[in-house]
Length: 143
Image 1 (tube, one colour):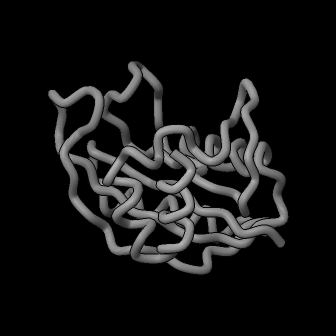
Image 2 (cartoon, helix red, strand yellow):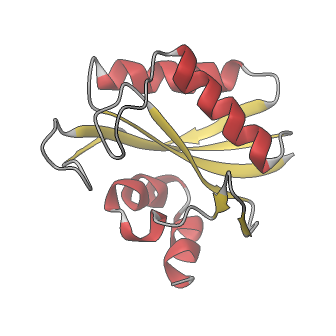
């Protein structure tokens, strides 16, 4: 089993319910066990600011999936929950990002680990600090 940390966010529909449903779906997978979850926080939109505030949280998981397979599992849940990608940083029903996977460092066309912008986004770091302060510190120290 590998440990990984995910960041979840939503700002249209019922964001808190969508976060809860995404966590349920992740935990329902035979290859993923949710081990810890942060509180849900409200944050202003980042990047594209003319949209509703976001509900954000972080979770820690144990998984038998490789980093790329974990990414695909997250994307499948997003799609199954109705996410359609219209614009970068635009409004979304659900967003699930792989922030860190163990201490793996990789940069591929599909996935960069740790997440390349996590260290500069408080909506990622604040929930992550709640459940895995050592991981949040590691992300920030890499800069």
